[in-house]
Amino acid sequence: MELEPAACSARLRSFEYRAHQVKAQGAPIEIVFPKEGLGWGLEATAIMKTTAKAAAAQKLADWAASRQANELYARNWAVVAMPGVAQKLDSIPADFESRLVKNDFDWAARNREAILAEWGRRYNAKAEPK
Image (cartoon, rainbow, N blue to C red; front, top):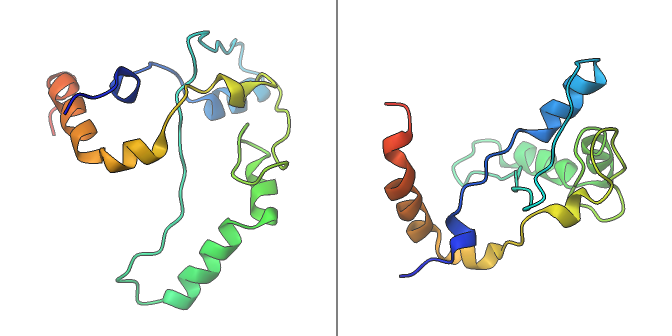
C-alpha cells in the first residue's frame, strides 16, 4: 500500500500548550509557528470495555464532552471539540486552527496499521532504546 506523504511526514514542533503557559508565566521566549503548517495533538476520552465501574466512567466521559468541560479546556487550548467555545489565547495566533495541516482522519483510521508500520520503518532506528 502506498501512503500519502502528508499522512506519514513528521513535523517537528513544540507543544504550544506548554509554550503558552511558560510565556504567560514570564519566560523570555517567542513562540514560532511554522508557515508550512502545524501538527495535530489530539486528546481523547474513552471507556474501556473491561471497566469495573462503567457508570462512573460514563459519567466522566459525558462530563468531558460537555460545554462546561470544553470551557475549562479552552482556558489552555486554542482548539477544543465544541464549536464556538474556543477563545483567543495570548501568544497563540487567532487563526491557529486554520494553520493545522489538512488531515483525513477517516483515511488514517482505516490505514492505521500501514501508517504505524511506515512510521516504524522510517523512525524506529532513531528512537531511544526501550
